Image 1 (cartoon, rainbow, N blue to C red):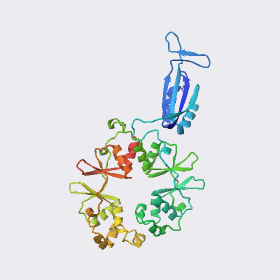
Image 2 (image 1 turned 90 degrees about the horizontal axis):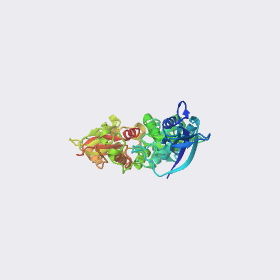
Image 3 (image 1 turned 90 degrees about the vertical axis):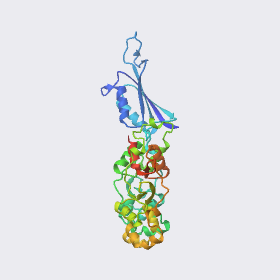
Image 4 (image 1 turned 60 degrees about the horizontal axis):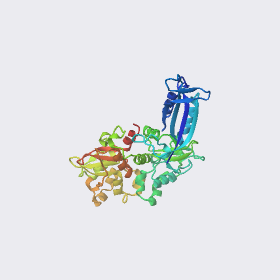
Length: 419
């Protein structure tokens, strides 16, 4: 059961709020709060007031000033906003509040249900560090927890900054965290050595951007897109860190709240097909492309993946920088990483003999053939389910014949949440 409150207002037609009929003013005010509240006003058939005045809609009784009843159903966490606004607006009437157990709250099939708050979705008990913590300590947490950013808090657990993978790379981390994780914990101390002697407080990004736990989820999505954040610290009303909100958390909740009983054509998404939102920004190579040329494509364009396609654009496989790193990391010395942070192209040149011994000289020999794809005519819901299940940031799009025609990414999906 969902915990809600039913707020009832009893007033009259003659009541005015800032010069407007009370009922209309209250409905406008509730809409202006931009919360998951349902509000409706009704004019009563008959009634009486405390001063003895009576009202009826019977023609033979001349009367005016009919009673008006306004009902507002709102999640518990948002109820105080409503009652505070009513106390401010209502010049004459009665306000009553009661607890309400709601079995279901559906918002006409929108991609992101309007009633969801950040606290409904966030990950609780977040990991955090203090400003005096060492950089290797922070990096170890990020490596083990699979995060890309870590909140930094003061003694009262108030966020004062955030330390990210980019911050660590700028201070000497030789590899991205996901690549470093491939090496295993026994090699992490050597890789983190350049970070020794530095503290989190010296490099953390500040001021930190946070979101309140009772904010609408849509507001958090808007903030993440506007600032290009992958994760947001969540604070309670006292400003204390109480959770984190990541893009994957949002995708999971979209999947959970998809109402499969609603027909596709009845969903409220303005865009329903993958082909309407996909984009073409993945580089492609042929299966016979030399491995060194694949490395050059990845290095030159600062990308993490290339698609391997046939002459008629059939998708054959994907090569990621993780695949390239996996080819080298058992052979490449730490001096290669620590002394120069060599690109894949440079590592290929230095270890050409190793590449030949590995019997992987072309894109077709290294590519992964088991690729999760989505058809261009699939619904947005189908794409979201695949991206959530396989934890994908980008999903290759193919036509009915299997030709590679584009990508759909998390950013694109999150944009739809705001429509």
